[in-house]
Image 1 (cartoon, rainbow, N blue to C red):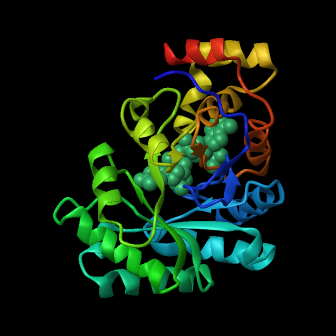
Image 2 (cartoon, rainbow, N blue to C red):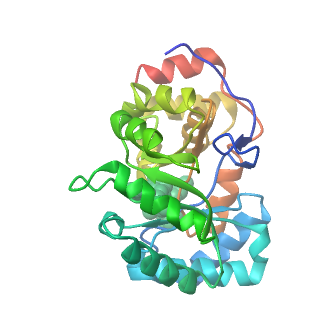
Length: 271
Ligand SMILES: NC(=O)c1ccc[n+]([C@@H]2O[C@H](COP(=O)([O-])OP(=O)(O)OC[C@H]3O[C@@H](n4cnc5c(N)ncnc54)[C@H](OP(=O)(O)O)[C@@H]3O)[C@@H](O)[C@H]2O)c1
């Protein structure tokens, strides 16, 4: 793919005209909820106010945490993303019940974005999208999107829409795992769908990569900041790293406000 660099730290969500931070925060696999609450509050204070959660995370405990943070920081100051399990997209009443339970845990009347956590391969994509649209129609969510959808599934989702837009596809994407760049990213760029890169720092695995350590010295940044900057340099790409440590939130923030040179991005593509 031809190298295009996006220098903005705010990215348009789909083609909604609304902008979200290039870096948000994930909430999977939290160990210490008190500590995580402080980290999420810091993230919102730092402008990293897109928080990703899911009904599945610790059986709803992560959503409850996001709800507490929203109470403290003001719901309107946050962009809340949640994900419902694919088995909920077989029948409208199942999705609606799951959505209402998520909203209760999140202590809010709406989320900003709800995603199908991964495609349900047992039923047509068109049925799942119809049910997803119903959630927006009923005002439970401002926007709808998908997660772990491949190119064909994204195209099927787009073809199934009646009224709403698919604004995001949340997929695994890091400088060490660039599979998305083959087909999914070009498809999303072409169709104005925002990518939310999950596991973007490979759970700290980027710290061990020699090239990232080398570049971190050149730029005066950390390997995590280099890894995140690589992702958000791409058009349409945002990232949702997870941490429950305040100092790491500040580290994530430091991946904004600058960009790697194109030659270094090219070098990272060779990893
Ligand atoms: N849609 C999906 O199917 C899907 C799948 C997986 C994840 N997600 C979402 O994406 C988010 C991020 O993905 P992820 O949690 O899998 O992986 P990640 O963000 O790549 O890594 C998170 C892990 O790395 C550690 N970490 C953070 N900063 C670090 C640093 N500077 N140095 C060393 N270690 C560091 C964190 O520990 P500390 O907390 O101790 O800092 C945490 O254990 C999730 O939380 C979730 O919201 C979505």
